[in-house]
Image 1 (cartoon, rainbow over the protein chains, first blue to last red):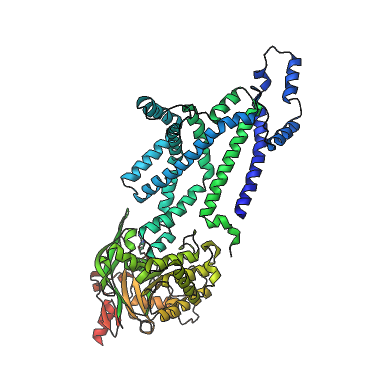
Image 2 (image 1 turned 90 degrees about the horizontal axis):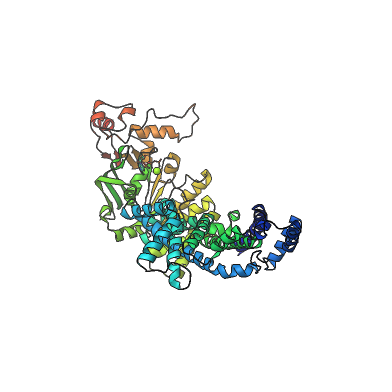
Length: 309
Length: 324
Ligand SMILES: Nc1ncnc2c1ncn2[C@@H]1O[C@H](COP(=O)(O)OP(=O)(O)OP(=O)(O)O)[C@@H](O)[C@H]1O
Ligand SMILES: [Mg+2]
């Protein structure tokens, strides 16, 4: 419990810094007035719009307003459409969240299955196949694999629908693809970790205590190596988020990825700010979740090394 | 005394990219019920591999047995099937590992690993197993609250006692302790060895104690075997071996251990190096370091000769005897 609170505070601090970076980065990316106004507009028109959007105030004040509003759950109104940012994001968020959680679960499942299989069948056919698959998964861009899958399974064989998110069947292809692409690197990490774990002293002692192969593998070796894989959560989420943006565009998925592309093109400050912030919150809370899962598995993290006697 | 373990002429090798390593070259010894049997020899002489062969673990390291037999309580250990092997390991023969800091699973408490071992070999409910775990912990002088700890929360000495408790938990007939004290400081080492002997007396188990420390071996063992280059070159009761060592290697070993503690300018060391396991041994492996070697020593492997339960493999010793 103490650990969870500590992690929560850490997450809040991270989000605070993220908000500063977002705020500055968006403003460094260009002048929104250019895309909103006619190039021939007069200086007076410029000043009026600038005042209306709050861009004439000093940066620090603008930031203060942004944070204060954000804390109240108000991310401002979109410059381009005038609708509340939160509302726009709210429409697109569930698609992305559901897709990435699904992909994460699929990734964990595939990682456990493929990684364990490869380690147990070390240097045999199954191990080689897993190695080739994950090399392919890592070297082919998700984009490429996505398009092939759409062509083959969607257009040619018509097994899965290929665009939108209307029925549960719509989730299968993008979810599995994204999950596979995340697990392709994780499975190899798990395999190598598990192999090292199987030769460790504590596994040797477990065998010499007479424990059967099942206990040795699942209870002792796999648990330890999976816990190591979970500690790479930052790396997993980087894969997951970049992958999901690509997958969304391939499958015309009504999610945040597509929305952010439009917002950036229009230099819609509040919308971009809002999207990046929501993404940050998403990543931070997902990694909070894995950290807590990791802590549940590993007492050294849960109890903290400093309690050593 | 009854013979508990009997190893006869055990030879085996590991194939490596560099070639075939002849690690054991005819190891023979036996361990009696209830005794403390020491195996001593310098690093690389094959002590650990002998122990792991007896435990049937060596094969996992790629060790292949070429010849020989291992008999435990009259049963052929090399012929055990998987199921019998699972009970043999931990149930009949237990191990105290060398490094207690890494030998327990970091994700489970000491208690749960003790309970796990107990329930693997005995039909017990979790509650019964817990009660037994605490009883054993008390015997090993482990405070009950320490059992609730995870390995990373415990000191090396405490962990050593916990792996000791795991080893004796199922009342094995034999406990193999392969340098169980190298991770501990000297005073804790001695305490631990004494504790082990007390438990052994009470449980009626034999201990096979492996070490390259002559002091420790002579402190707790009843009988001692000296190992050199994958063979047991001499084996006798503690007093027989220490007072009347016969093999030139044993004599050199005792001299260099300086057991009497007299002050000397320098410790005696043995000149030369042990043979390379890559070469298949011919004759006596110690011959080219031995002050008494004869032509025969380089050509023929000396057989084991026994007099008054004192076994030795040495041509020179045989010659001495025939003279008297
Ligand atoms: N897994 C392995 N692969 C290859 N060679 C090995 C392996 N394990 C041991 N050996 C070799 O086998 C020989 C005997 O090793 P062993 O560990 O039995 O010696 P030891 O007497 O226990 O030495 P120490 O006192 O250092 O523990 C050594 O030459 C060693 O290099
Ligand atoms: Mg050793």
